[in-house]
Image (tube, rainbow, N blue to C red; front, side, top):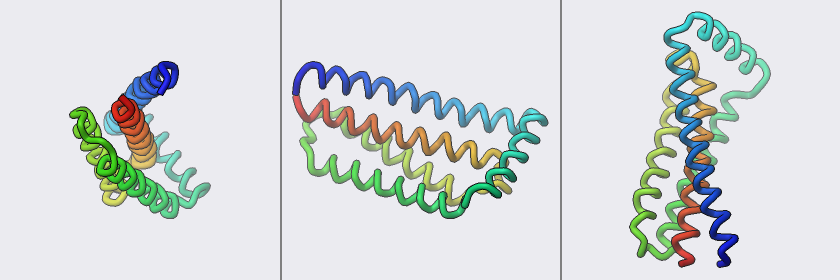
Length: 146
């Protein structure tokens, strides 16, 4: 692997880590302001109705859950197949699996009745899960090629 490719993978890993962190902060902010600010709650209720009319939400939810499960299986199989000499792969893989399980749990258990900002939080958690999977694959490919 050339230095340029290795450097681009480091940049991708750092960028995905930052974007994942921002997605989690966005989920927290949406949840917090929906609970504490009446204007945000009204806007979220308006968006929920608008999105439920425009998109097939149940189908999209099951597609997202199947994609998350596929990403977890791919990450686990890549870990089992690859060289496991590097200790950084284990915590990152566990974090990837935990994040994916949390997102699937949130999508299955919660709804707009339990949490008004469900759709916004779902988008933020899905983005964080995808960025975490990309981060894992970048770190795994950097460490396995040394």
